[in-house]
Length: 75
Image 1 (cartoon, helix red, strand yellow):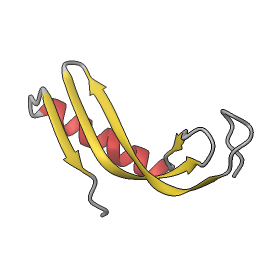
Image 2 (cartoon, helix red, strand yellow):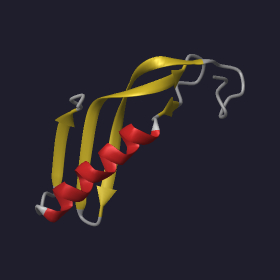
Image 3 (spheres, one colour):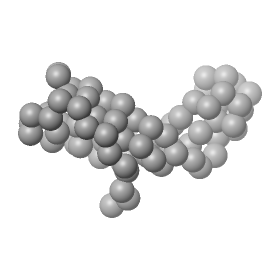
Image 4 (cartoon, one colour):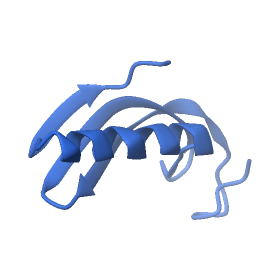
């Protein structure tokens, strides 16, 4: 797909690092599957991946985690 940010690049499969914050909890997840623009590097996550990341940070917040760094593991 054409990148909506730079309007010049095309996106292709790659990985991203997602940083999510919920209240006082910050979770960094590396290796998240994403479509990445070959021109500007903008990263696009699909709906299922986004929902999974949001559940992860919510669970960490409920467990009282302050900072966590993880590697994405496909379900």
